[in-house]
Image (cartoon, rainbow, N blue to C red; front, top):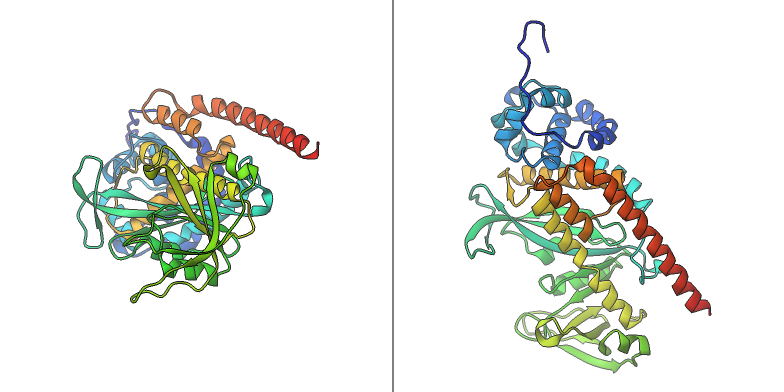
Length: 409
């Protein structure tokens, strides 16, 4: 603050996230050197934008471009940012021209730290390698833009929306890949762009196409698709061999395990690859069963069901993102600005993971929602989450020892 300048006002709410941002300082410092902009109204440094968005992530009261501008002029804002005022119009212009990929190196470094603590859920063998749960979810836009997709919300109203596609690592509970699309790209086409060789990709019913199957086979990747019963949108499975079920398979509700191929049509040529169909009883589902299609031909059938059931983690991540991270409605209208916001949210999740060792879980979701609703502060719930994760780790270790004892005995 310059001599004679009036003292900036205080933000009315307690500001959280300072400890998490301290972890990030060394990472974002390079953004100023590499991506500083000096073109007229775009005179804005990427590190200030990232820090401002992160503060919005950790503080529900900072949830729009206008409130970010207001916050930047407060004493707390001046303490975190290098500029005197982060104007709404300047930030909006910045969203139009920014390349969100400038944050990928930061995310990669934070991911590397997070992976040190990651392990597959109990019951899944470590030999599986990386398991990715894949899904998309719609987020309402503040305005109707040409590239948006019309999506009907829970209230029945149709809104201009962007679809966020996420590939989430089951071991860490953290997103590995995120992408933003509108009406121009289907979920299966988006998934085909981000296949990771050697990893197991787990999909729900809405993400399926012959092109996606072919792309995964070509990339030497593995997949577990949940598919609908044969019909207009789902091809018929031509059975070539029935596989025997083990006691563990039957105990897990496996109804059938068969090898075969997908049937094509006059308009679509089916992938020429041997596949496996596993049908599992699921009383809570429509039809009372789930149907899985995979190229994992050597894995026990009951393990395929367990892999699929861990797909819920990506749904939990979306729920957590919308409820805690204030992303029910997006504040930017450009693809680049939206993707930047989501990248920042991923950084925020990674920082919380590193600070607490707590990956997004049902319990963490409840605790963080309490903070978002003002029932507790982040500083109050962090020790609780740390203790909870410590106990979970002890319980997992104990269960693993008992399972090993059964196997060896």
